[in-house]
Amino acid sequence: MGFMKRFGRKKTPKNKELRPRDDDYAFQAYHGPDQTQRLPDKILRRIFEHVCPHASDESLEPSEDSGHDGCMNCDMRDLAHCALTKRQWYGVAAGLLYKSIRLDAVHYCELEEVYAEERRRKSRGGDMDPPSVRLQQLCRTVRENHHVGSRVRFLKLPYMTRESCKADLARTVSVCPNLEHIDLPDGFFTGDPTCHTLREELQARCPNIRKMKYNGGSEQAFESLLHGYWQQLRVVEINKVQIDPTLLRRVLGALPWLSEVSFSGVPQINDSFFHTVAAVPDFPALDTLSFHKVDGITGEGLAQYLSNPICRETLRTLKLRSCAGLPVAALHVVLSEAPSLVNLEYSSTVTTPLPIDPLPPMASRSLRKLNFEVIANTATQMYSPATSHYQYLTNSLMSNALPALRQLYVRDPDFPETLTLAPPLRPFADAPPQRGFSQPLEVFSKGLDELDWIFTSIMPADSYGRRGSMSGGRPLSSYSASKGLGPQWGGDARKSVVVPNGFGGFLAVPADGGDGRPRSAGNLSPSGGFGHSHSQSLGGNGPAFRGSFMGHQKRSSRADLWR
Figure 1: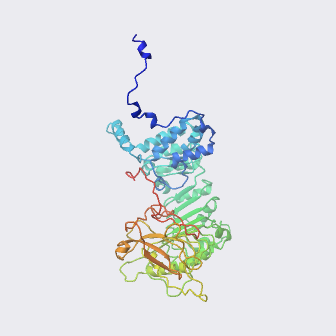
Figure 2: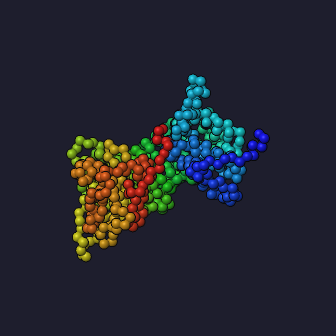
Figure 3: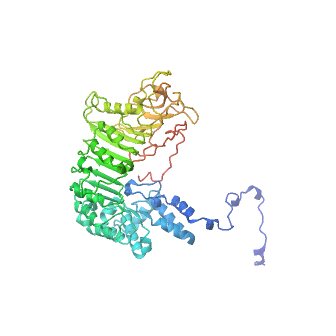
């Protein structure tokens, strides 16, 4: 009888209808055909890129400059699990898993505390460096499976790992023939003998390197490019290298894919560097050209370089930092010879104001982003010598000489206010054409004692000089004022509206709504390395606008504890 009781019907509780069942809160399991089998590899790859975002990172920046939100180690683990889930997924997921490898020192999440405690117990009092262990495991994997090694294209490592594990790096790159970028120790760029083996392996096994840097002491390594090494180089940085200009031209002319070159502290370079010389290759046409503390270059020299039609049409980005031979008065000469220039970065420390003689405005129909960072050499003077330089910039803007400009960076916290002081013009039929902007302009300003860029958006008037439409929200802007303007402005740091006044000028009025406190503009930042967050670009002349505190959502990160 005891055995038959097992088949008895269980009693139903009296209050069954009042007790919730687990099925009421759980999703129904899908038992139909597997729809993921219909997904093409292109869609699967896109999905896996969202699972592990850094796996699609193809930038040539070092590990510390190419961070991503979230925990990169956990994302890589999730992608590895996807590769082992289905045979269909393995080829796509494994291709991403070993394409762009990033080894981080810690987990940027709460798991780091758990793993750190486990490492302390397993090490038995000894010190264990997690990224070094991971590099050794990667080295073992790629050496045992050459098919995996051929997939590696980008390898990014923490600073201390690449400085202390040079032998493991050499063994790793020796079986990665398609490697395009790797974070290297500092001694590699200065001719350090301890990096000799690593250099030989990289030159012999990795012909597709895209970026290389040469600092003082690496003159012999730079000259070795004439032997045919690294013909795929795109970016070359030359810092304080003592080399003959003729030899420098020969080396640069031997790199057919070169697109970006930066010079820093090279006193041998002057205007003659761009001259056409028989039996010497011409200076190559570049997409990006940068000079830092190169005093021998002048505006006339750059104009001569841009006189070549190929160079003139190719140059997109020009960076001029602390070059004594290139004052602000020479910028209009350079811009007039660069019809395809999109980005211009200029920084200088001035001691005297601009001459009283009028200068032609900075004019360009292609320039979209301008970094104009002029700093006075001394702050003891009553009248700063940088004031005349920013007044020259204001005149160039108000004369509509930069119609394509969308982003402007200045090192003057009061510069946005100077744009609102434009004198009104007569709105009559016989009046001359109105001065002012014909496009939306984003202004990022910062003082010497400020860390973040302060964002201000200026909206243009319409063709009749009237204020733009209010649809889509009032064009708000947020920036800090150096002087308090009363409680209606929010105190020292105020929230304001910058709108056309209908007569060719601009007017700043207090913004209404909210709690009256200024919103931080830190969530909006530049894309070229001058801020800490991302800005919203304004395109076209329409009234649509996305301000610094209108609908902007910042993605939360679990890495705040470690960053």
